Length: 389
Image (cartoon, rainbow, N blue to C red; front, side):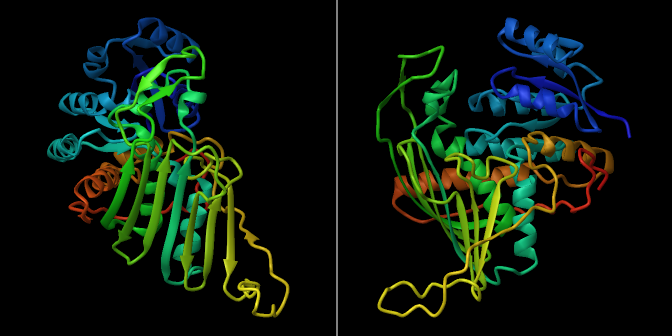
């Protein structure tokens, strides 16, 4: 199978892992890159031996390029993606699909009218940990899933990111920046959302950058920085979600799902290592094994509490495999099938995020207008970095 040729747009902080990983996949090759900062573009082209670099127009007019990899800031996602689609290119974008719902719908409609594919990060739900969780659910370990929780709580990216201002502009904040990882994981595990309740606040009007090279600079905050929501899924599961850049520390799990037969914990020691990483710890506690009789303490314990079972993954892609969704889309282009990290899924995630804001602002439940299919799971025997299925 000949490789799908890719033009990368945006040589910022996230580009390195794409440059590194695309070389590992058997069906993809980056042959050109561009960036509005010429020095940065040339440096990355030299570092990763990319044969062509220049302007966005050069990439869009290059007949060898089939896919545009859009790694620009969120505020530019729709503009670049629409331009690439108009030029007849498939597009794979970093999250979110767009800032505005209307632009997101325009992307989906244009791609469909031109017979082109749109893919979108995050693709961490294709990693070993979440694929194993999908198998646990599909195999019935949890029974009927009743509810769940999802927490992403930290004190913002200005403590470590070299260019953190955009995290507090439209299209970012904790919900639009980190929320896609959590929402995409939940939808991949549970299916689409049907209704939302939400509440938001902006706790600090200004933030102080404590990372280099912009230490001491103040950021004007434009978005909610503490977001709480209740998500009603079409399958009946009710999930409580919090995303926050206002919390110094927390013991809350990243994601837990509660079923009639037990509890699944998708957790990690790292405060940010939730569904935004590919591997990590999976723990399960079956109703027959768990001893909950120590609470309240007036009920005598029947036996010693059993430990949580740590579940090993049967799947690959447990390291930083960012770009696996792009490789899957490349295989889908060649094999004429639907890819897993697809635009319909990304648009549904986008509407969920906007729905949380709308529910908070208008003090009402928000009913989802879009839906999507649960992405197909990966087979456990898939060869590393190869997508022939």
